[in-house]
Amino acid sequence: MKRGMVLGMLLAIGALATIKAQPPAANAPKVIEVEKLKDNLYVLRGANGGGNTAVFVRADGVAVVDAKNPGWGKPILDKIKELTGKPVTTIINTHTHYDHVSGNVEFPATVDVIVQENTKANMERMGPVLGREAATSGPNIFKEHGGVGLPKRTFKDRMTIGKGADQIDLYYFGRGHTNGDAFVVFPALRVMHAGDIFARKGPPLLDANNGGSGTAIGDTLAKAHAAVKGIDRIITGHSTVMTWADLDEYSKFNKDFLAWVTAAMKSGKTVDAAAAEYAIPQSYTGYTPNADQTKSNIGVIYNELKK
Ligand SMILES: [Zn+2]
Image (cartoon, rainbow, N blue to C red; front, side, top):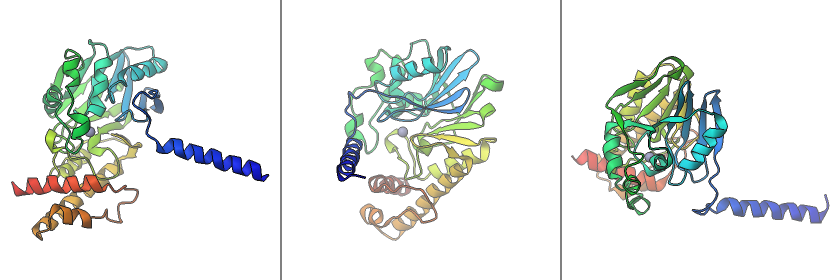
């Protein structure tokens, strides 16, 4: 290879690296990427779009799980039009966070919005997220849109929508990421959308401002893993599609963390000292550390254990 060509390639790679390092501006084009899980089930993602969206095409319409950040409702609707001619009839929000519910307001007001009952109360408030106060203390997006996108139907522990190939089962197993985390199951397809109670392999966001709990999350995940049957793949809140065994492991990861933090508190360590010392156990391969989140979570668990 000629020197000039090599230099040109290096420059091109350098330019790409620079582009990748910069977060897209708020007005950057909202590009939806589609992952097809089944002929009638898709995962929609987008850079800076927020949580993973599931699109489930049923006989008489489309059910959407989570609607991403503000401004992403329209791009989701446009992408769905490329996938099917059927109208969106239902939105299910896995929990209250802005990066999962804000797109709701861009859907037709006739769409049925279904959530766990605590999430309905949280969405009516849209209070700040613990640790993300700067980004989440603005006005309630639903109030700004005259209540469009707010839940119309709720469930407490369990709800089934439709039957056969169209069936959706909704479950609530207790507090975790918030106090209203829904597990959304498509039994005919053997797929679950777990939302942010299983966002990724790493420390969870324990949003104590919205009922989240570090003493409960491991048990809640274990209950889901024990109670729901026949699932092969899990759509996570923000990461790749995971396996059923990954959910079991994530439950254990959170239980191990609780045990570690409980011992740290008993030994008299401050939150800061415990946070400086914690490392993800080697046995959890593929887990990404997050020092800020870990410190916040230790604080949440200390507060819960003091009660
Ligand atoms: Zn969340």
